[in-house]
Image (tube, rainbow over the protein chains, first blue to last red):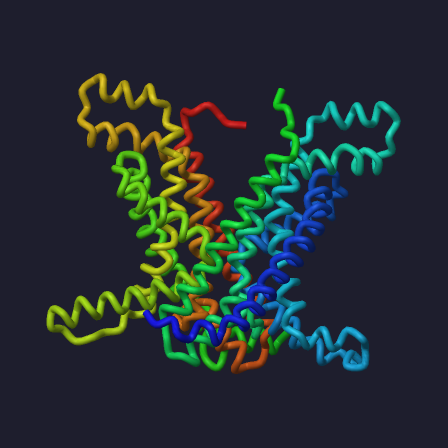
Amino acid sequence: MDWSWLPEYLPQFAQGLWVTLQLLFWSVLIGMSLAIPIGLVQVTGPRPLAWLARGFTTVIRGTPLLIQLWLIYYGVGSLFPSIPGIRETVIWPYLREAFPYAVLAFSLSVAGYEGEIMRGAFRGVPKGELEAARAVGMTPFQVLRRVWLPRALQNTFPTLTGEFILTLKATPLAATITIYEVYGIGSIVRTETYKIYEPLLFVAGIYLCLTGILVVGFRYLENRIPKQSRS
Amino acid sequence: MENALELLALSPPGWGGNLLRGLWSTFQIALGAYILGLALGLFGAFGKIYGGPVLRGVLTTYTTVIRAVPELVLILLLYYLGTDLLNMALTSMGFERTDISGLWAGIYVIGFVQGAYSTEVLRGAFQAVPFGQIEAARAIGMSAFKSHWRIILPAMIPFALPGLANLWLIATKETALLAVVGFSELALETKQAAGITKAYFMFYVAAAALYLMLSLVSTGVFSLVERRFRRGQPTQS
C-alpha cells in the first residue's frame, strides 16, 4: 500500500465530497416533494392521475437507475438541441451542464420509491382522525395540511434514513455522465497514478463514514421526535 | 417511427438482436449472482445465529460494509481483488495467469454483494419462525441437522419470500452497473448501439422497456410462488 499520492489529491477529494453532498441533498429534497403528490393521488384519485402515478412508480422501480440516468442525460439531452431557438433562452447554459440531469434522474428515482411509501403512509392514517378533522369543520385542504400530511410524514420519517443512504450509494453513477464527485475523483486518481486498490479503498472509506454519519444523525433526530402512541 | 423499427430489427444492421443477447446475459448473471448470494446468505445467517464471537464479528463487518458502500465501488474492488487472488493462486501452483470472463466475474461480484443482503433477510426469517416449532422438532428427537432441514428451513420460506423477491429485482437491476466496468450485458449493449447509431433516446427507452418487462414477469412469478408457500397459513393483512 502506497499512500504518497493522497496529500496531492486531498483538495480534489474535498471538492468531490461537496459535489456528492449537493447531489444527495437536492435529489432527496426534490424527490421527497414529488413523492407527496404521487402518494396522495393514489389514495384520493382522480382515477387517471392515480393510474399515472402508479405507472410512474412501477417504471421507476422496475428499471435500473443507471439506464434512467443515461436515458435522461444522453437521450433527453440529445433531443434539446433540435428544438429551434433553445440556444438563445436562459435555460440553455443549464441544459449543457451534467449536474441538473443527475439531480433530475436521482430525484425521480427517490420520488418513485418514496411515492410508494407515501401511498402507504397516507392510507395508514386512522380514518377517525380525518373524520374528526372534518367534523370540526375543516375544509378538505385544511384536513390535508393540518392533519393528514403531518401524520403521514411522521410515519415515513424512519424511511428517510434509508432513502438518504440509498441515494448516497447511487451518487457514484453520476461519474458516468462526467460529474466529478468522490467516486469520480477516485477514478481520476486511479488513471493518473496507476494504483488500483488505494484510491478505491479511500473512496469506500469516505462513503462508509458518510453512511455512519447519516445513521447516527438520523437516530438522534428520530429520538427527538415524539413517538406516536400505538393504541 | 419506421426508422426506429429498422434500428431495432433483430438481424444486422438492426440492433434488436444485440439487445436481446444483452438481456440474456443480464438474466444469466443475475440468476447466478442470486444463487451465489443465497448460498452466502444461508451461511451468513446461520453463522450470525450460531457462530462464536469471531465469526459473528466477521459477518457483521461483511454485512455492514457491503451495505454502506456504493455498489459501483464494491464491484470494482471485488473484481480486481478476485482476479488478483485467482492469479496469485494460479501462479503459485505453476499455472499461467488468466482473465476471468465477464459472465463469471459479474456473477461472483454481484453475488458477493447480494450475500450481505440475503444474510439479513434469512436471519430475519429465521427469527420469525415460532420457537415452539423448533422445540417440538427437538422434543421428538430430531438431530440438529434434521430439524433444520425438515422444520426450520421450510418454515422460514414464507417469511423470507418477500425479501428474497425484492433481492432478485435488485440483482437484475444491479447487473446494469457492470456496464461501467465493461462487461457485456444489456446496459453495455444498449450504450454501444446508442453510441454508434446516435439514436440515444430510442435505445435507452428500449432498454428500459426490456428491464421493466423482466421486473414485471419476475414480480408475477414470485407472487405465484409466494401464494403456493403460504397455502394453509392464515392470510395476513
